[in-house]
Image: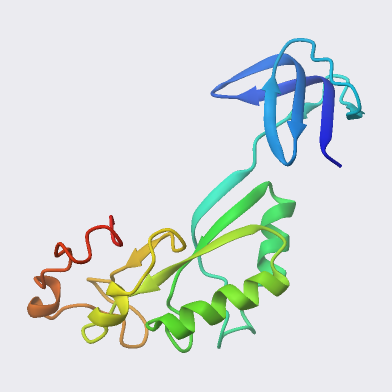
Length: 178
């Protein structure tokens, strides 16, 4: 369905509530507020019900792979969506920790087949995976997680040489604006 028009909603947006309509075209919000006319749109009559934006959770621990008895990329995104979370960013401290591009790619593959919500994953850093971290594509990955206190597995980064490494050389600056 290319167009969806919510009629007469209480729209929660930017810290306030306004009465009006909201038009979605091709999966994106096209117009907000007032009376909107859109020929060919599927209309949903909200009649004063609240229409709220989805929430982005930027630090979740869904535990896949390796700890799926606690949660996984099927059950946890569904629970998140039920609570209004439409997008999540998942941490790398799983078993095995997400410390290689191969393991990161596997998490994306798992989520593509299981997740109901939008997703991204953090690449994990350790004292000995700087080369893997430098391969991270900033266009596809939400960030690099560096645990400088304590963490699970070998994800503690406490080696001063690793922490002081010149990560953003001119050769990497375009690929790694982090």
